Length: 394
Image (cartoon, rainbow, N blue to C red; front, side, top):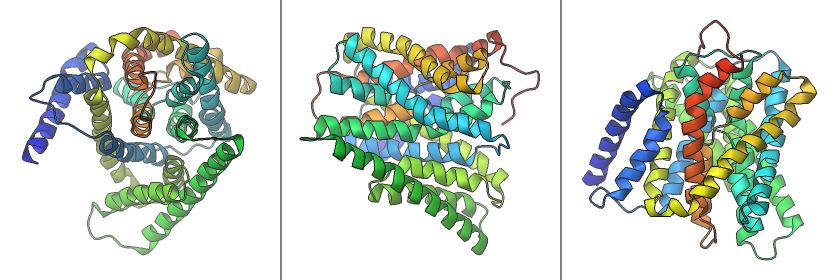
């Protein structure tokens, strides 16, 4: 136990130190966490065996807080068209991206059809924390309310990606799975996810009004418990726990919660730590020898995701007559990150055999996505004339 805690503290210190050293060169911090995980797993004296199921549970808890944060920290938006655009991008856009990516894996890379679908599902979501970590650190302010649109879209598309992933795992592992079974799974995930999210949100609002917390940190602890309750309540009913968590956070963000401005720094710290955990564990579970066989297909999938993401953004936003430079920037902002990693580890814990090393493919896609697009996102914003004069405010 002491050795494990010592190793954990060393990892956190190393992550923070390396981030400070490399941020001067524009290297995204998440890349550092991934490489650090690979480094620790490569040396036997630093390696501690971890069960995939245990890692999956740890990462799922971390993702719960990330998604709750995405909903809870969403700014109040008067323009309903922004919410509509973001909602369509997170749902229809995510499905389009998944289908196009799956077709590419099947037709071009010759993956098995079922594995191709799973790959598309795993890589269909975007990482809100990664995008806003970059935008805030570079103090960028975007035109056309693009920051708000990305904030809602990135935070709310993870539940849809998870839904597609659950269906993909069911197809790969289920015997005689038919359309009716998949339809029931889809409806239960959406219906119970929404009901659980709404119920837990209003339970939280009621409790905040009735309970007078004595400790200053009690509000933050209570909200953390609400987010965990929201996920577990939906999951027990076979609903989409991540959808429930996002809805809970989103509803709570629209209510007059005491000391909300003081709660945000607490969740900033939780999210920062959650990202370190998720990206480090992705690297920790990987093996260097397994990268070479999948590097070519990972590279081409990364390139094609630029196309599939642009097509989905174009199809969703053009009916609203959104400017082309905005559509292009939103498509480039679709970084793959925490959700793709957690869902992949979840799939790995449920799939015993596969003819494609989906885990290392997702690792390389996330790595390339964050490194290439994440590192140059401020450059793209300026080149596309998407920046305003005022600095980006949190």
